[in-house]
Amino acid sequence: MGAAHPTEPEEENMAAAHVDDVPTPAEAAAPAGLTDTEAQILAFERQWWKYAGAKETAIRDLFDMSATRYYQVLNQLLDSEAALASDPMLVKRLRRMRSERQRERSSRRLSGV
Image (cartoon, rainbow, N blue to C red; front, side, top):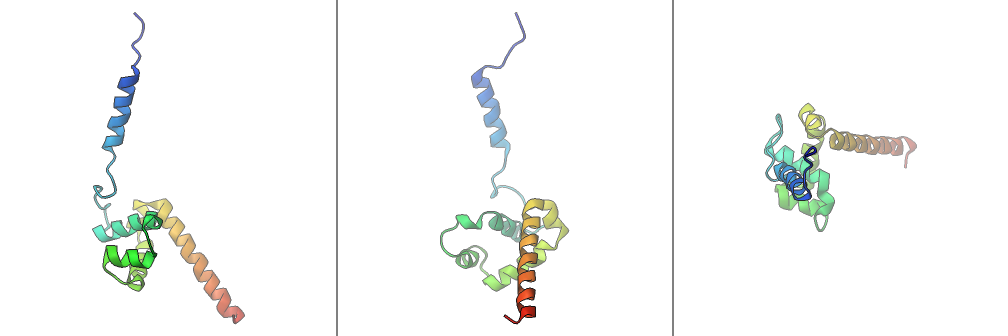
């Protein structure tokens, strides 16, 4: 008679289909311009707090590198356009945090503390 309206089960199936189409971080390919390791580093920075224990331990376990080397790689990554294109909000937040730490260090040096 009137226009057909989707029934609730059909709506649920449509919603489930959309959720199933979204790849998990492990399934997602590295964005263009990023290596797999760089993509994994960004994913880790997005959710490192979910890992038990100290961040440095998780870095060693996941990436098989020292924390010092990890932060060197991360800092280079934050300056790359590929990282910015891949996850703009995360990269901008990490850049802002890095700038704040640099300003704090500079002000301590200048004040002699």
